[in-house]
Length: 163
Picture 1 (cartoon, rainbow, N blue to C red):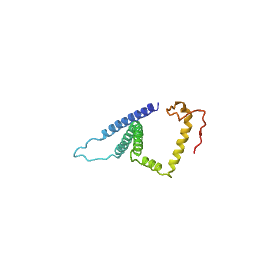
Picture 2 (cartoon, rainbow, N blue to C red):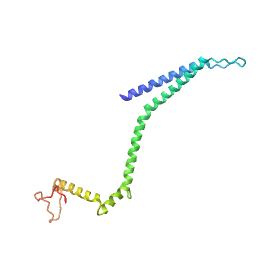
Picture 3 (spheres, rainbow, N blue to C red):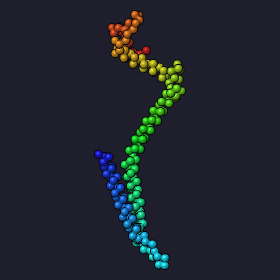
Picture 4 (tube, rainbow, N blue to C red):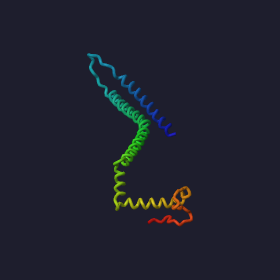
């Protein structure tokens, strides 16, 4: 419904602008007659004021017409294009930071190769918590050919406890 009103107001402003341009042309065209070569030039200031005011009106009408066109077409397409551009650039930046030698990948590798890296300890603890929490859900799906490995639900576990 908002699109209907936007188109309606744009059409209305276009009709008003065209009407004002036609009126201005008719008013100016009546007074724009060439003078004869030998006649003295008489300046009628009332006509000059009318012409100047009509010119200002035409300028405002053309500006309103331009703004109406920009309002209907410009904002929506500008918003859509800005969203596409932002999405593309964000994905490109994330992709480049996780490519080989990217900043994020280098940072993660540095943290995990250092023994005192704070991310290494936190991540290892978090992985242990997640694996231990999910183990009861998948224990019946785990099969092994090794007879030494017994995965029995009756055996005690340290579920939820982290070293």
